[in-house]
Length: 157
Ligand SMILES: [Zn+2]
Ligand SMILES: [Zn+2]
Image 1 (cartoon, rainbow, N blue to C red):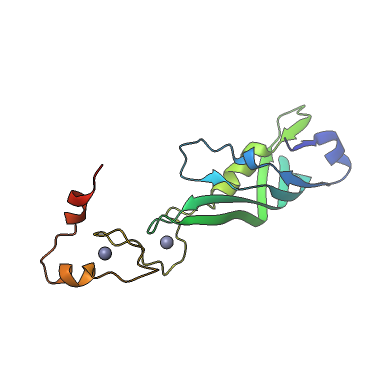
Image 2: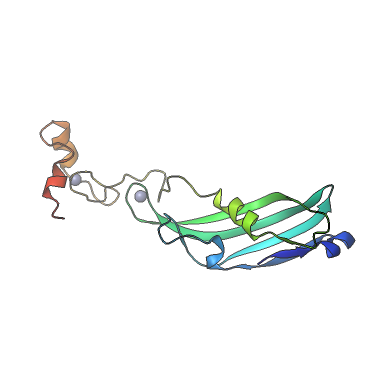
């Protein structure tokens, strides 16, 4: 838990840095992303009119699978220059920043992660990885002889 004391901030801005545990993002097991090790943060809080401004940087690695070929993709959620404003209530003594920091990092999750922008994906018919080899399916489907769904008939589920 990353917290700042308002009374300390009244004297001067406070800088904190440290490790973000893999659990920091609080991802559910059925999320499309999983933790992939520790991250880090280096944040400075200062009082501004009406509240507290948190600035600095934070990064944490996650892993997912490529939307085309299903290979594991490693992604770093990082904010090199973040600015988060916290409204302060009268008499508030401490500010916890974890939740807002987590939300800010999660904004960096790509909607459709790819192992590579040029990933060629899997063949819809034979399932081979087209990045590694070229199958002959494309040719026959172009000729209209094989429906793209015929491979599903061959799958034994
Ligand atoms: Zn891929
Ligand atoms: Zn194929």
